[in-house]
Structures are given as C-alpha cells and as structure tokens.
Amino acid sequence: MSLPLDRLKTYALAQRESLVSRDGFAEVDLPPPGAVAALLRALPDVLGAKALKGLAKALLAARAAKAPILFGIGAHVLKVGLSPLLADLMERGFVQGLAMNGAGAIHDVELAMIGATSEDVASALKDGSFGMARDTAEFLNGAVRRGAERGQGFGEAVGAAIDAAALPHRELSVLWQCRQRGLPATVHVTLGADIVHMHATADGAAIGATSLADFRRFAEQVTKLQGGAYVNVGSAVTLPEVFLKALAIARNLGATVDRFTTANLDQLPHYRPRMNVLDRPKGGAAFDLRGHHEILLPLLRWMVVDPPAAWLAEAAERPA
Image (cartoon, rainbow, N blue to C red):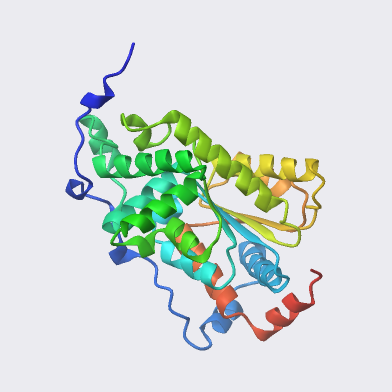
C-alpha cells in the first residue's frame, strides 16, 4: 500500500494560529546592580538552590579553563521563549555546542519564518490539520535534502538555509545563531516523530544521512569534554540517549573523558536523564534541577553573567 501523501490538504503557516510569539520571549538585559548578589543571599544553600549555584560555578570554571560547555535541549525550551537567552550564552562563551531533537528544529525554523510557533494540537487533530503547515515542511525538508547532497549535517543544513533565505526573524533561530558564531549545532531525529515527516517532501534517506552526520559530529565534541560540562534541558529521551552513546564512542576511542560536569534541568523527573546524564557517566559533579525552563535558565544566566567576585576567583583556581 502506498499512501497518497501528495493529496494531503495543507495550509500556509501564516494562516495558523500559533500559541507563542516573540512578543513574550525572554529579554537578555543585564540584571540591575546588586540584583544577583541579593538573589544569592535570599537563596538557602540546600537542595535545589545549592544545586543551581553549584551548576553556575561549574560553568564559570569550565569557561575559565576554556573547556567545552555543551547544551542538549528539548523543543519546549524554544517554545517558551528562551532562544534569545541561549544566543546570549553563546556570545558570552557559555555554550560551545548545541544539540536538539527534530521538533526543536521545527520550532526553530517557524520562529525564524514568522516569529511565532506551536499549534493547538488537540483541536487541529480533530479535523486532520495537525502538522499540515506547508511552509514549515517544504523549508525543512528542502534544506535537509540539499544538505544531504552537500554532505552536511542536519543542523548545519538548516542553519545555512535560514541564512540563505534571510528569514525575517532569523535572530530567533538558535541554529542560525550557531552558524553566525561557527558553533556546532546538531539535530538528532526520530523518523516518524516530527510533523514534517508526514509530508510528501520528506526524504528518509536525507533525514537519516544528515542526522547520522550530526550524531558523529556531536560524538566528536564529547571526546573533548574533559573539564567541561554537558547540560540537558528538557529532553526526556532523545538527547540523554544520544549523549550516552557519544560518551561510549569517546571512551572506546581512548579519549580521556572522566572529569566533567553534567546537569539535567526539567519540570519532572525522568528515567533516562537521571541514568544517562547524571548517574552512568561517572564524570564528576552532577546536578539535578527541577522546575520550569523559563524560570531556571534565566536564573542560571544571571548567576553566570554577573557572578560574585569570589565565584570568579574560585573558578580561576579550579584545575583545567
């Protein structure tokens, strides 16, 4: 049986009502003088507050040692307006590599296209219009197909396509932001899990080739993780699994990757982040933080962009 996907009823992305837009996105202004110090005084040095401060100190130490800091994000991180914050952390040297799942790439592209993203899944599913934004699928699937022809990875191909098309809100795209800074951005896809896979323009061979290229690129980054940090934010399955396999490759090839920081930031506890990111790597300090991304990440950013002088001194003294 062959599905007649060319007969799918699609619509223009601009016609869709999106649930989030750039109007409510994070601002990246510096905190007022003394604000971070006051916040730190207000936080007890126990449990989650202690872990948040510990993670901030670890990121400061990794940057001081010029060791890589890698972020793996779920799509929700982009949906809640944190792409400007991630771009700011890149600019300040707190992100040297960014990994995401396929859904993250979809939201990233839609933000670059129209400055908004996220549809009402429940209502759209009733009439079969869920995931049928024509522009999103044509742009992403086209970018990936061209990327496969050029031997590019998924993230590189999409970032390049956003740049070439000069999409009007490209500053909201973290894939484009990585491209602007020469940072590796990788996309790790589960075939059949993303709305663009429903469209006739999806090319399984191209998606597989570019996503596999990104896995290998990510694994290469992990070989250099010594003294650095891996921060998993909002990915309950895909990125924890990808990280574990990449770490296995690194150690199998003889890379020294036995001293680094890991962290998991999410609203709910999940098995794979706990095991694959925090427990099994045995790399050193591991921080488990529970809470909303739109609260935790801005707090973490404040702590690293305006840290106490004592924290900076402590970071400089940590072994490289």
